[in-house]
Image (tube, rainbow, N blue to C red; front, side, top):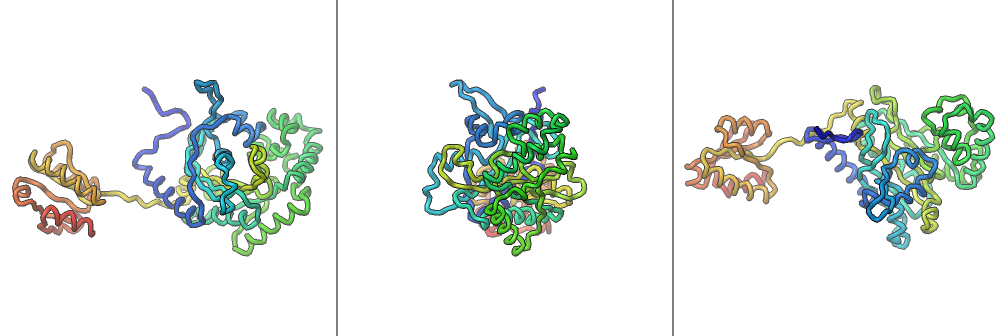
Length: 420
């Protein structure tokens, strides 16, 4: 039997209403912050992610779904959302838009070949936001404010916001030199990936999942000590504004994030809820000065974050927060004859066009079975159509919760339900 591919899932109707609820709220919050939706292709040129995400990252080296198309072009299913959005910003010359920064959001499936874990899939859905075109601590704070707003709006309380500054390009260069000096004498004690990273991107050693508890990682130099004055001032402005807004945070000097394009502000949001799982990160992001130029774009800066809807739902479950289920239909039509069934189909057509959710029996069951089906579908009202109802073009509209009935013409039934 053909089954769903490993690391993916079917989202059945018993669960899909949760996704609809979450996505609707995310759309509403994004619009409140004046972000507009962007939709990019599911696959892009492989070179986009190699250049933007970084050749030394696990995403590029181990996790991408890459294939050759019939034109012998190397294409990759998108593993993250920032690079495609930035590519679109450059290609569509959005730097010439009157309003800057250009504020965009997306809800889209991403693909990474990684080991399946609780709340992590090889196909997963990300909600992400990007603000491109302006470098200002207020934009960074807006991102963090929006991030906290999203999770708190669902009622989540066990949250921990962690921030750091990776500094500008010059600061990073000085810090990388210090890390090489720190790790090189004992780099043989680290995993093979870290032994490669010592030459290509030593900051990634701090983000290694295998060696995170190594004593040299814990005693590594703090990046804050290598920030130049401009980078320190930028970070202090971000923290000061967060304090003014009452947004609680912790500074983690080892937080570097997993992608190569981050500069200045980097952040993660974690869940402290009991039972959430060993991997506590809910969301992450940061500023990416220089990314657009790296992709042959204009000298513009950006900042963004992305969250997994799967892990958001997992956090809600861990804190016992239930999503309301909008279950049921407005009207169920029961029928007693073949002629009534035909007339019910016509009536359903009129009802649905007027915005009324309605259904009927399609298995030609007895009236008692149809009424049970109306209960299962949580119908608010029912009508029964037989020969008498067809002759009079009227029927008794029954409210299921109270049992009250009212004799109405077919047109009156439609108008009454529309008003209700």
